Image 1: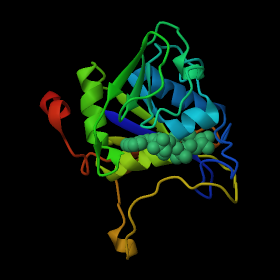
Image 2: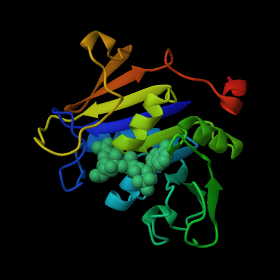
Image 3: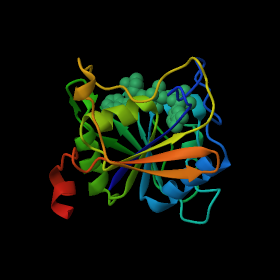
Image 4: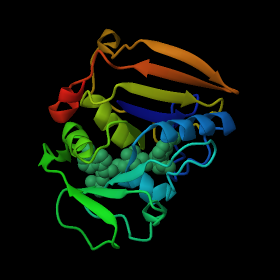
Length: 218
Ligand SMILES: NC(=O)c1ccc[n+]([C@@H]2O[C@H](COP(=O)([O-])OP(=O)(O)OC[C@H]3O[C@@H](n4cnc5c(N)ncnc54)[C@H](OP(=O)(O)O)[C@@H]3O)[C@@H](O)[C@H]2O)c1
């Protein structure tokens, strides 16, 4: 089960032009994010988010276990002092495309081959499944979630829309261009109020591409 999540403004933006995104979502949206973390085996972020936000990726706002923390960092850009690497007994993993600067003991480095200029999301999920991680949260940012969506590697997508207008800054999902609106990806949703925010729980099972070990387990 792979869930992607993004918190965005009414105008579909996930950060300001400076990359600031704390806190687009209010308490209820953040509680939901921590609940998602508590329900998965591993939480995955792209290196852009790890560098911009230096997140802890722990469960603090609700009761529940901390998931393993995973960063997709093909070029070895994340420094060893990143907060997600803190030694707190939780597994910490770096997905890389090759050699990278050394990291402290205890941080696991998994090499995933580059395919078509990226680490294929399906190959990432196979690598994570081989480590025992079967419930995975793709927490951000937009670049990373978009790659998983584009590759058909999400079962669910949770978009939490906050009642704010940022007016500028990076937008959320980005997929290959289409010509006509009727070619848009249209998905079944359920809608939930989270305080003054709205959660769109998108069911992507019809688009889901099943691969490797993930396929066998289902
Ligand atoms: N509102 C929200 O919900 C939310 C959530 C998270 C983050 N954010 C904000 O979003 C911004 C960062 O997001 P972002 O979209 O710029 O970056 P991102 O998705 O966090 O990271 C993108 C980078 O991760 C690496 N990467 C991810 N998936 C890969 C793959 N399959 N194959 C190869 N490389 C992969 C690449 O690194 P290389 O460039 O090194 O190749 C890529 O450039 C920050 O401003 C943060 O505050 C908002």
